Amino acid sequence: MGKQGLAILHVDGLSYRYLLKALEQGRMPFVKHLVDEEGYEVLRYRCGIPSTTPFAQAGILYGDNSEIPSFRWWDKQSGLEVSFGGMSTFKHVAHKYFGGSDPLVRDGASIATCFPSAAAATYRLAYREHGYSMNRPPFSQKRALANWALNPLHLLDWTWRGLLQIWKANLQYWRTLLSGRPAAKMYIVSDMLEEILLHQLTRFATVEAMQEGYASIYAAFYAYDETAHAFGPESDYSFRILRHIDNTIRRIAANRQGKADGRDYELVILSDHGQVETVPFDRQYGHRLGEIVSEWLPTFEVEELKGKRFTPKAAIDGHILLTFSGGLAHWYFKDISWRLGYDEIEERFPGLVAKVAGTPGIGFVLLRNGDENHILTSEAHFRFDAEGRLPRGARDFLARYDEPDVLACQLDRLNSFHRSGDMILFGEYLDDHQINFENQVGGHGSVGGEQLFPFILAKREWKFNTADVIGSYQLYPLLKRLRDKLVVPGMG
Ligand SMILES: [Zn+2]
Image 1 (cartoon, rainbow, N blue to C red):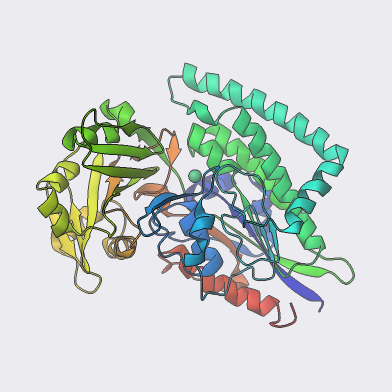
Image 2: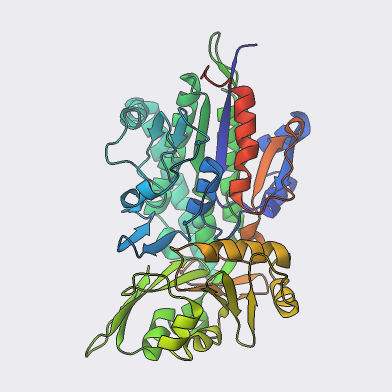
């Protein structure tokens, strides 16, 4: 047998349920072929909380995603906003992460991921949301771009597809508006063009990495997630994007069998989190969350990330930062250098926690006191720790989102992070809709519904059992075992 390798394709934001639906509707014929003809099975797993890409992807790539509380957060120790946006600032705190871990794509190729993953080749594609590069860009990144752009057929193909997509997206946008449904306009047009370019570059780089024989490859595709943010996870347009993704998977799969002295690749396809339909908080309640907070604490400057800034006209006593990831919000008292506990907040700001928990649109608030978790809702106050039994009331309350014991464990983990907010706010989840702090039609980051349930497509013979996986970091040992089986250690 020749050399083998592992190629993992990450389809961002596609939940287990919507994948099954897409298969049923014939939208992903190649993936269906993998299931019907090549011995693959679709498995559901739990990504954990927050249901966001940096958290889930770090878990899969390193087996460790602690202290990644969200898509964007405030690092009190470094006095820094950390985010994966266009100006990704993760590089400034990257030295604090993944120290002792064995990256899944060590010496492999990491393509369009949030993290460089100690890969020999990091194809950093200029991407607004997820792109991340080290200070010194690796040589291979430039090469991938140059090789791609040097082929005039690629540019022609991209321009043509881009124009077609823009035309379709705009048509869809107006149709959606005319039918009375919301569509998040900010994602349209320029983003689509960029998305198509990125998608094609990622595919190109993946095939190139296979031809060059990297032992392990991880490539991330964000087109479905982006489209679902704009139109909703179940919209026809988002589902049509899945056909493009299916086509991409087919084209990558066509290169699985290496040349004479190349590598034969096993393929794993997975997602990092799902998405749910959302209703923006301010549209539902007429005020932004930051605005409400600035009314409670009129001498504090309140800043929303991303959002607005509310500055007092007179003296300022302190600064509050609210960082939003879909239906999840972290509340930081920026002037205090440690994470405040429940008792301390009650002492400094009597009655504030109850006000937050009683705000319409807030499902519950999570705080820490030593090792103890506090959940406050508009009606109740539950306490539990990692060891003890969950109180009856808490059990009943959590059951509306997922298995109470599983959820309690996931919440305890997020609440143990030093970089979580002093308070963690969860948007209400009602009638399959998430009250969202960002202006999106589809969203994720919080708890409730499909956002917590991504998928992994694996061969039955690998015997992956994901029923007990309650965080993406628990996928890592399964994938590492497969990698080590395929790639003989030391033989690259
Ligand atoms: Zn997303």
